[in-house]
Image (tube, rainbow, N blue to C red):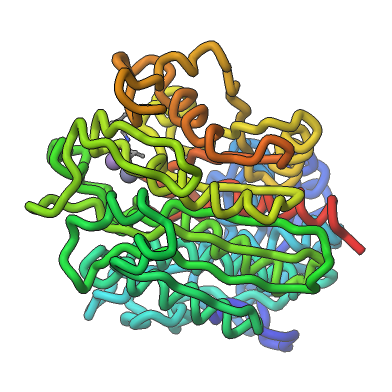
Amino acid sequence: MPKCFIDSTPKALPVHTVREDAYGAWLDGQSDGVKAWLASTGFKGKGGQTALLPGDGATGAIGAVYVIGGNDDRGGAWAWASLQTGLPGGEYQIVSELSADDAHDAALGFALASYRYERYQTQTDDGNGPDNGTDNGGANMPVLVWPQGADRDGVRGAYGATKLVRDLINTPASDLGPAELAKAAEELAHASGASFKGVVGVDLIREDFPAVYAVGRGAEDSRAPRLIEFTWGREDAPRVTLVGKGVTFDTGGLDLKPASAMKLMKKDMGGAAHALGLASMVMVAGLDVRLRVIIAAVENSVSGAAMRPQDVIATRKGLSVEIGNTDAEGRVILADALALASEDNPEIIVDFATLTGAARSALGTDLPALFCNDDGWAEAILNAGLKTADPLWRMPLYQPYKKQIKSKIADLRNDTDTPYGGAITAALFLQAFVGKDIAWAHIDLMGWTLAAMAGKPDGGEAMSMRALFAALTDRYAS
Ligand code: BES
Ligand code: MN
Ligand code: ZN
C-alpha cells in the first residue's frame, strides 16, 4: 500500500463529502462563516472539487469539503480520486456517513491517486523525494484515516494488483525482459504457495512451444523467449486459466514498426501484467478455484535469427501458420499459450493482450475490447465492469471473417489483406487454438494512459482487471 492511510488520530482534519446533487442542502446546514467563505472563494460545489474550509481561529486548523459525482462519469473509485489530488499534505478523516461501497471506493480512489512511479527519479516534482520503488507517502502527501466500513483487505488487494500492473508496464524493456517478467511471476507464485514452472530458449522446442520460440528467437540470449506457468489452489476446484501476452518489447520484428508506433512498445507485456495482477487478487482473496496462469514472454526483436515474413511456423496445436507480418506476433505466441491452456479443459480461460491497434481505433484507449464465445459469461463480465467502474465493450467473433486469415500455403496466416476489422480477425485467429467447449474470454486492451486523469497517472494502467475479479468472485464465491 502507499503510505496514504492511517488509523484514527485526533489530529485528523475533518472532510465532509457531499454528492453534487445534495450540495445545496448541505450548504444550507452550514454556519454563516462557512457559507460566506465558500461564497467568497467562488466555490461552485461541482463534482470532483475540493474546498478547504477555514479553521476556528484559535487553532487555525482547516477542514475540507469534497464534492462527489457530477463531472466524473467514470464513477466508482475514480469519482473519489480527485479528493486525494485536491488536498494539501496533512491528515484527514471523512466525517460524513458512507455506505460500505462508498467507503471502499473512497479508499481505493485515494490509494490509486497516491501511486507514483519514481524508480528512476532522483528528484521529484511533488517535493516528496523519490521512493525508489516503494510507494510514496512523503510530508506533502495527504493521508487519510481509513474510511469507516471500508473492506480493507479488498482495497489492499485491488491496489496491490493495480500497482503490480502499473509498475510492470512502466518498467522499461532494459530492466524488464522475459527473464525479469518470469521473476516477477515466480515471486508472486511463491508468495502465494503456487507451484511455478518456466521453459526457456531452445527448451521451448523440446517441450513443444514452437510458436513462442519462433517469435522470440531473434532476441539476444539474455532475452531468450519463455513460457511461464504457475498453478494455485485446491486441486478439484473449478479450473480457471489466465493467459497473458508478454512481449517485453515489440519492435515489430523485420516488418519494423515506425518510430511513433514503437515508442510505447515497452507496454506490450501489459496482458501478462494483467494476468499476474488478476491472479494476485484471486489468490489474496482465496477464491475457491484451481487457478492456472500461463504467460508467453518474448522480445519481438530484429536480428539475423529473427523470423521473416512468409516463414511458415509450427504451433503446439499442430496448425501451421504463415507469418504475413512479423509485427502480428502477439497472436502467434498466444496460439501456443492458449493451446496449452486448453489441454486440461478448464471451465474458463481468460486471455489479456495488447493485441491490436485496431481495437484502439474501434474503442479508443480506455475501453478494452471483450471477445467471448459464451454469452452468459460475457454478460457477467460486462455487468461486473459497470459495477466496478472498470468497463469493457463486447465485440463479435464474426465467423465469416475467418476467410481473411486463411493462408494459401499453410493452415492460417497471422495477418490479413486489409486492416479492416483487425481486432476481430486477430481474435478469430486466437479462437482457432482454444478448446471448443471452454468458456473463453479474450481481452484486447491498451494498458496505458496517454493523458492523466484523476487517479490514473500517465503510463501503465490496469484495465478490466477489477471487472474480471468481480465476475470471478460472483461466479465462484463459496
Ligand atoms: N502490440 C501491437 C498492437 C498494439 C499497437 C497495441 C498499439 C496497442 C497499441 C501488436 O503486436 C501489433 O503490432 N499489431 C499489429 C498487427 C498487424 C501487423 C496485423 C497492428 O495492430 O497494427
Ligand atoms: Mn506487433
Ligand atoms: Zn505486440
